[in-house]
Amino acid sequence: MKLQIEDSELVRDYISGDEKALEVLINRHNQRISSFIYSKVLDRDITEDIFQDTFIKVIKTLKKGSYSEEGKFLPWVMRIAHNLIIDHFRKNKRMPMFEGNDDFNIFSVIGDDKLNIEKQIIKDQIDSDLKELIEELPDDQKEVLLMRIYKDMSFKEISENTGVSINTALGRMRYALINLRKIIEKNNIVLTN
Amino acid sequence: MEKIYTKHVGKNKFFKACPETVRFLLDYSRSLHVLEHEEFQFESMLN
Image (cartoon, rainbow over all chains, first blue to last red; front, top):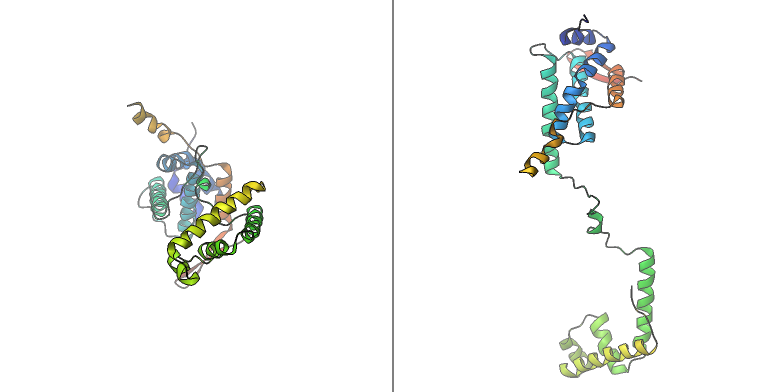
């Protein structure tokens, strides 16, 4: 018959400096405590973390001599684990963790607004080509288009600045766009990013 | 009904902390020393 040393005795030995006693205690209760944590958090890595934090608390309390053998060792450790599980859920409530899966990746909807180097070069090229195309337009149309697109002026402001009616400014803008399209089609220019 | 049962399948699964975690705890325990001075306690980690 194999005699099992009581937890309380192992705790006493550990407090007296026997490190081997801790190993016995951890191995004896590993499955019970880990399974308890896992049943609550349902995540292997989090279970390992909480198990580790639980025993770090146990070790500190025992080494500081703050442990009192009022209850049993295992229920005491379970209480520590339980409190740490609650802390874990409280922390996650404040800062919920989102994990993607094979069907959905968070980075497909949250992206960096900045263009990458390649797209920036393409955009610069398009801007430069467009400026050259605008130079081909008649002066009155070019003037309205520059004010509208590059200076972000309203048609009312354009009409005041150029001394023509709003309708004329609108008409010039319309023809400017039609002519730009014609030039682009005629020269087979591709302006896409 | 199936969904209600299948939802809790993993709940009673046995789980054990891995040997690395246990090893870490034992090493941590060996390196941790608590020094007492008057009413103060100081923790020190000795490698």
